Image (tube, rainbow, N blue to C red):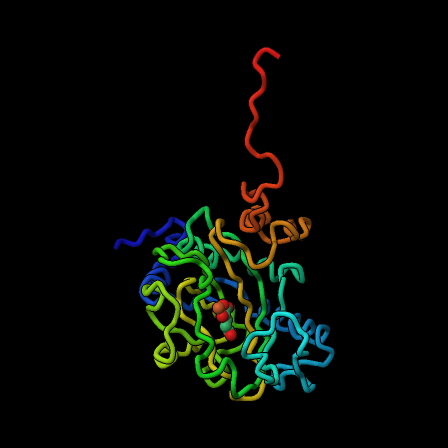
Length: 296
Ligand SMILES: O=C(O)CCC(=O)C(=O)O
Ligand SMILES: [Fe+2]
């Protein structure tokens, strides 16, 4: 089937990345293509380490991870099956990054990332779903033998079509290596249009190894997870996740995102469009015009 290449993709020189997405369901875009300078990633790392310390109460450093012995409270909301398995946590998520700092808002509207999201989801249809940091440290188990392989659009009923219902960017804030707990994925799996079948899926997974500053871009149907981090230190990433406007948002950005923060970024018009602030649905009051009496 022919691939439609948008003007935006051509202008930004992203044709090979689009073709990789079509074939493999994933592409890695290096800093020289997305244009974000390395000192911005350094600043984001500092912000996330400081936020981790503030949230948890012990220092976090890239070479050591948390300077304390951590556990999930058995009463913690949202614990996954793996976490419940009485294990020491090897990661946690910092959510709602768009509220924390302008650097994170600017990252979410990076023109290269947005062009690739629009390619997969549809030009006018792409919206923000969530902005999370995955904060990881040494942990031999990680997501376990399944590598946590999943499709991000897994909740959507099948059959899935070719267009992505959701799509994702994982910005690497530290180098990604297999033993350092890199992203794992199964090339071409997005074309199967179904969830991973284990243990075969894990046996076909490959690491995505790339330097700090790279962004991993992938289709919502691509089978992915992560390898365990076997070495000391931290793996930091930011998952800026997007959705078709008819798919529910993970974070309720439209209803709750502070409007003044949306004005404080590189492109407020684009930010507000992706935040869905002016979307027709869901409406909260009569939205269709009501006829009036002609002779009143
Ligand atoms: O890096 C990881 O642990 C997995 C990331 C992931 O599943 C996602 O961003 O959707
Ligand atoms: Fe995922």
